[in-house]
Image 1 (cartoon, rainbow, N blue to C red):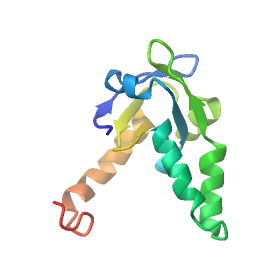
Image 2 (cartoon, helix red, strand yellow):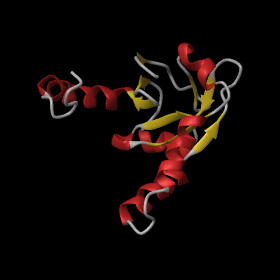
Image 3 (tube, rainbow, N blue to C red):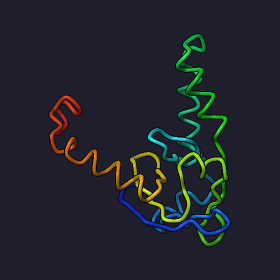
Length: 143
């Protein structure tokens, strides 16, 4: 489970330090791909395989499934962190998420998300009141 908010910087070579608390879990490899709201999703290999299996059972006749799968898999990049815990984020993914220097890495349960700092700040400002106002329809019977 991934939790918390971290603020690493992207270096001139497009590398990013993973949060130290997750380096061991991601040491064997990970998959980075495009996420919603112009962030990047970072999955441990096992979680990415689980999603792949789930998508493989979705009907290929459904246009939304085809469209989502094409973008999701075509933009995916498998990476292995270096000895210092850095991953290289491919240029196309950096461009998609608007990553230049200041980044935010958030824990999002089974994945990490990488955001441009300003984009995250804007998103969070827009969502915090809505989060505070949510009623039980989102998590019925849980909270």
